[in-house]
Amino acid sequence: FPDDNQYLMEEVSNSRDAMATQVAFSFYQNGLTIQNNGKNMSKDFFFRSYPLPYITLKNGKVKIGRFGVGAKAKLVEVMKHNREVIVETRDDSISGNSMRDSSIRDSPHNCDDALRQRYFMHNGSLCVAFSKSQLAQNGVRISVVSDSYTKERAEAQKAILKKKVKYIPPSFKVVVDGKQVNTTDFWEDNKTKTTVLTYNRESVRVYFEPIIKERYVNELVDRLVDIFTGRKSQNTKIV
Image 1: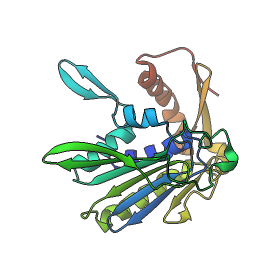
Image 2: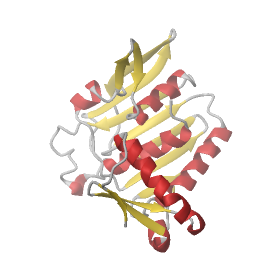
Image 3: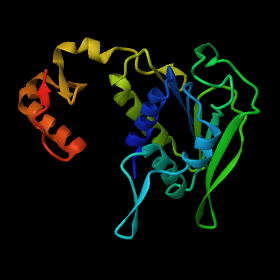
Image 4: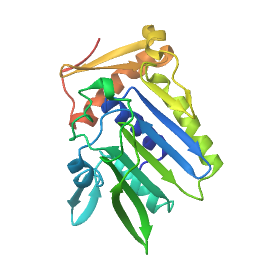
C-alpha cells in the first residue's frame, strides 16, 4: 500500500492529468482536504469504476495492481487508520460541466448534479455510500476525516509536499494551507544540469547533481527500460 509520499504526489499528478490549473491541500485538526479545479467525472465512471482500484486474481489470491494508487490510498486511510474518506465531483456528462468550456471551469454552480462517495468502516467491513454533494465548483474534492489525525502527521505531509513539488512548474499551482509552495521554475533554473532521455519517441527530463551524472546516467537508462518493458532495448538514447 502507498505511504504518504506516494499518496499526496499521486493526487498532484491526478490533478494535472485532469487538466486542472491548481490543486489545494488544506490541513485541519481532524484531517485534510485535497481539491482541484480540473475535469469532473461522469456519473457512470464515478459510480462504477472510480471506487475500485485495479484488482486481479493471481494464483487464487486477490492482487491490487501497481496503478490506481489514489484508489488504494483511500482504502488504506479507512482500513488502517479507521478514518472516513469522502470524494466529491460534478457529473461531467451534464451540459455546462465539461472542461471543453473553460470559461465556466471556476464558476460556481447549483449542487443538483454534484456527486459524493463516503468510505467508512462498519462492523469490521469496508463500506462505500453514495449520495448527493454540496460541491459547487468543478473538479474533484477529497476529504480525509478522523478524530485521531495528529499534528505530527500533518506537518510531515506538508514537508513532503513542499519538498517534492519543487519539480513542478509554477504555472500549475500547488497550494498548501492557502499558500503556493512551488513558486520557482526548477527546470529552467537547472537546465544545464538536466539530461533528456528518449525511448520510443517519448522523452523525459532527468536532473542529476553534476558530480554523479556521468556515473549513474547509463545505469538509470537501463533501469527505466527494465521497469517499463521488462527488458533492455537498443532504442533508448541519451540526448
